[in-house]
Length: 309
Image 1 (spheres, rainbow, N blue to C red):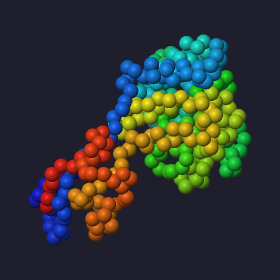
Image 2 (image 1 turned 90 degrees about the horizontal axis):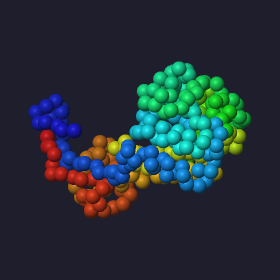
Image 3 (image 1 turned 180 degrees about the vertical axis):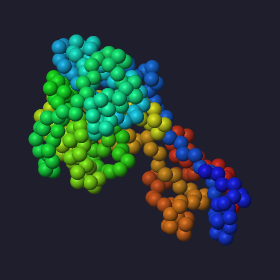
Image 4 (image 1 turned 135 degrees about the vertical axis):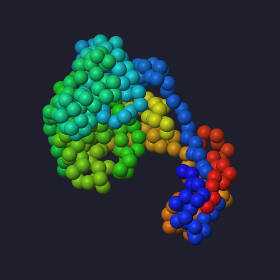
């Protein structure tokens, strides 16, 4: 943000002492997988054991596709479809987006089409329905639902994005377990997961996913991770045994691209009451270091004073 002298802000703060300010640019790691390399990355992961041998000739395989704006989601989904076909199995795509798309089968097809996921583009059928089967009750007392088309398949591959959620914290946030509990739960499942409020979602998701993993034909998950620039940077298959609540494979990976908060003697102006009355940082730095940081791929870069009032 730039503030020009003589403007409205200048007049409002005419009698307020303001410290020197610096314009700072935050730098993030930018490891990425180029779109052209995504098919090979997907095939490479699925060719590893135990994933490869789980897809056998003649099997009916449901592949999930969600409603979030995931980078390269059409390429990733098509690459999974192609690998399943190469193994001699019969893939189909299932919209896994809870109540999104107006909670209708047609609306969810429209959401997928907006991301380039259509039967023609994917080379396979998309089976969209809001019909679910009830699998049991979670240990938090909630009924557990699963998309009927997916449940009746010989196997389910959970394709999704793994990242921290923007509204709650817990051992499992946005990723395979949420795709099972909310996405494949369709409208009924999404309603139950959210029924206790945001404070309980972090507990409801793994408890519901535990039932689904025990009673549905989940083969494995293939989550992608995006960097700070919304680019695909990692694709990694996770076996169903590792998805089980109690095991937290990859749970911290999406956070690894977040740089620490670097702090230095320069006056940084945090718009909080504490920051306005002290030179201490608004939160404790995770890795004290010189300012600007010596690492060129992460941290903060500070220029000369950007403006004064």
